Image 1: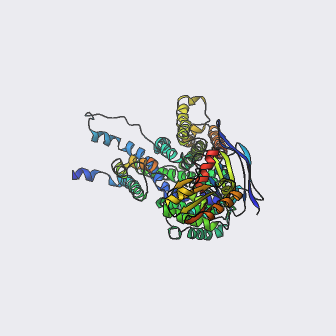
Image 2: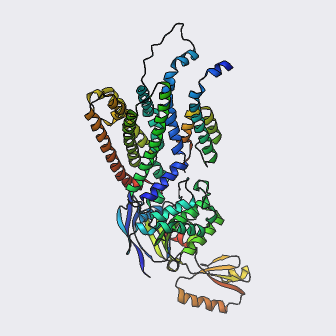
Image 3: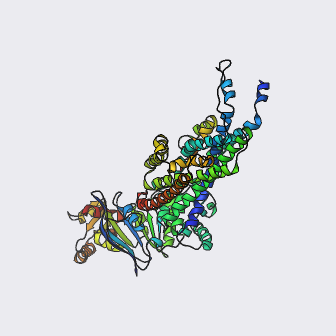
Length: 294
Length: 67
Length: 260
């Protein structure tokens, strides 16, 4: 994998308050990265600095081998359009402003609008668009010039469940072609579409890595064993185990030896064992852990 | 009354009235098409019709929501 | 000047579809009509309103056709400018505040191109507007008072247009520099308070952009020095260019004021 974007020591300070505090990360080509964190963590500020709309107080953003400004597509959280223009006119203008040749721009714009599902609405004025349509148009203006890096600020948070599903699928379709960095506070979305996670809290990057790495680091190695009855579960459990009904929750700290011991106990015990399952922590839980740690 | 009406120099007044009416109609057409106004639409209908020149100007400057 | 044509097209479309090319000229046409009409029918209006004592003979000054064009320019100078500036002053600051600028500023556009595209469209609207205003005024003046000299009209029209270019440049520069409310205050102060100051103590100088609006006709009448006229013209054009320059710089500097 080749690195596309290098962010070093990025900081933004408003008055005395550091909204983004010395963050470092790289984006590899054709991967998608989720920037997650609670509201006010500095996600939008970080993205704004990457787009060049906001000047960093310190630090730098470098796109290797290319001019950053000309090679990004940006979708703000609440994209606002010029209501008098049609979807096609706006997308075509966006393409031309990013240097797509005038002859090709209209065709590219039409293809992109078709791709985001606005093919039939392309000649309508944006003023009459619904929220979901504006979000699609927002995506189309961000991708029409085929940017190397796509920056999306909360791309699906404002949408209803159906719209969210559709837009997420759209974005997944783009994953193979371009590098994506998007922010979200909805962890399920991040879980669905991400190679790298960046946890932002109070402006600091408190955790980063691939989904697997982060998981391994934070996984509590919980196992659930389901017994035939509640009595059996109670009889099997140690005082340190957590019992709910016929389920026993066991936390394994030192995996290898403890695991073997557990298996031995299980094979020797006379009770009915219906299921043994390892629980993977959801991003939600990891998120809570990270938040607690920070 | 009819005599007085006939005395009005219509050839002179007509362009003035026509321009005013066009302005009012343009404002009303725009109001019909526009997605959002500052304040209720019906209020603007009255302002445009009854405060003719000033009403139309006011509508074009502050009546329309830009986003 | 990257993207100038594209941005110009966008500005034209917006101005056209929001009826700016129609309603502002119509307002100017009405302003142009009002002075020749009200002056001509003043006596009738007074009679119709009543309360004119028997035998009352108002001493109406004998008005020459050029006086009425001058009076119409006076109308453009107050209500006309008010309408024009009010509808232009948000051009940059409002786009920043409501987030519409974000999608453009995030692209590699040239701020000079964006600023100038707005300037060109506004000057075109102004051109059409005072054309309509002058036409209306000339139409009524010529049927009610008598014919006008084409040369005088051309000179006063083009002189007034140059003053308007200055007004647009000031308005846009303020819009680029400040938020809408402050921009409005500053632009109105420069243009209107400037006019008032020029009116009160303006006798001490003869060269100023604020005098230009009346210099077109004054030049034709020969009531001013030619050099004063030309110097005022040159200074106004120079200030217009300076305002455009400052406006572009401020637009770029304030790019981070946008709502994201």
